[in-house]
Image 1 (cartoon, rainbow, N blue to C red):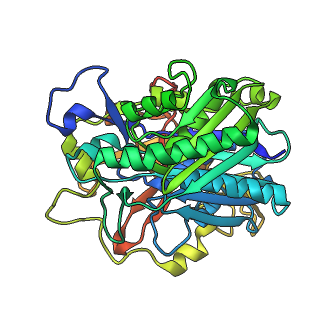
Image 2: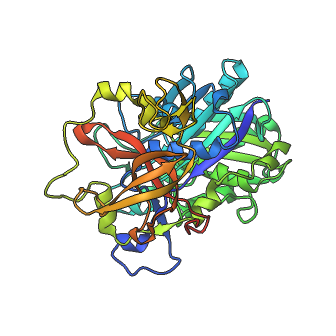
Amino acid sequence: MAGIISYGAYVPYLRLPLAAIAGGKRTEGGPEKSVANYDEDALTMAVAAAVDCLRGHDRSSVDGVIFASTSFAFKEKQGATIVAKALDLRRDVLTSDVGDSLRAGTGALRAALDAVRAGSARRVLVVVGDVRMASPRSGLEANLGDAAAAFLVGAEDAAATVEAFHGVSDEMIDVWRTEGDPFVHAWEDRFVVDHGYRTNVREAVRGLLAKLDRKPADFTRLVLYGPDARSHAALAKELGFDAAKQLQDALFGRVGNAGAASVPLQLAAALEMAKAGDKILVAAYGDGADALALRVEAPISGLGDRRGVRWHLERRGEMPNYDMFIRFRQLLSTENDRRAGAGISATKHFRDRDYEISLHAQKCRKCGQVQYPHQRVCFKCFARDEFDHVRLSDRVGTLKSFTFDNFAGSPNPPLVATVTDVDGARLYLQMTDANPKEVRLDLPVELVFRKIHDAGGTPNYFWKCTPVRDAQGERTR
């Protein structure tokens, strides 16, 4: 039976206290939301979640990638192909984007399951990420958070098998964003909750229960979309579930409503604490509703090396003020953008995509020296054209030199430029998610896929380094 083999999650390092949005006093331990850094978007977060999901798995076994989001970087270019390239997957993988709905994540999961059951793919990677914006200082803005989740779907060694699926489709204008509009809009809350959220999710869940001939008490956990904490708990109770014992935390006040990634993120968190024999009911909302039932299997015990949701929640750094948040979202008028320009060369990007997006280096067949960028002659033994490609993106490196640049046009100066040693290769990388006070020589760093700039109106992606941290956000020495 097809199901989820592995899972991964990603929550940005930065948090914005909700009190800062209204200009109020910040309190220790108060409600907050997760905020993507200025060099992050839905795609880079999806790559990070996928890296977490694929730990311990052979990447060559992945036959497809489905990327779900409501906030794609491109309107006419597939995001899944960039994800596949960043993960250094096979060239013949199936790639597809699923978007334009809050239940795009469960739609992508169902498509992956159908592909595996039909035999057109053995393993499909589903990645879901969202970075949604609402108008500044609005109530909706305080409710939205940024996150991503990923699932490896297959028929063998599934940690959670999918027993049944039931969905309904409904047309109403409740939450929307039109072409060219940067902000998410929502109709009157009571109308949306009563006629959209409650009606559709209730129908989907009850339809699923009828298919399985089960009752709410038969499930260990309920993973439920919620527009807000109050409606979330109220609907769980209305459906007959015990909110205190069965309802999965929707992470309001810690992450926020992560859009299409909200339910997948909750599902990843539920799998973190699950044990064999548990039954999980998942319900997503958006232009209707989806409901699916999962049974946790014995292989779940072998997935303990995932960072998952808990690790990311504990690893956090607080944004100093609301102005920085709106500057990161490019909502604050500035005199100019020193990062602007004609944009990247499509020809050069095509020629160098293995080295830039997949971060391939070269390993000399004669002496074993790893070097980057590519060249024809080994600088150690001088062998000519004797190289094999090696992937560096999943390795840990060390800082060999660094510079603080206050004039580079970074939204969060100084820009930290480094020379980083990765398996003997020296890479010139920017550092992200780091305080200048913690930067030092020989600092252990990991590599993260990030956005470098949007010059010429085209997102340009490459790899950066960030301090290796433990779950409490402390750097690993």
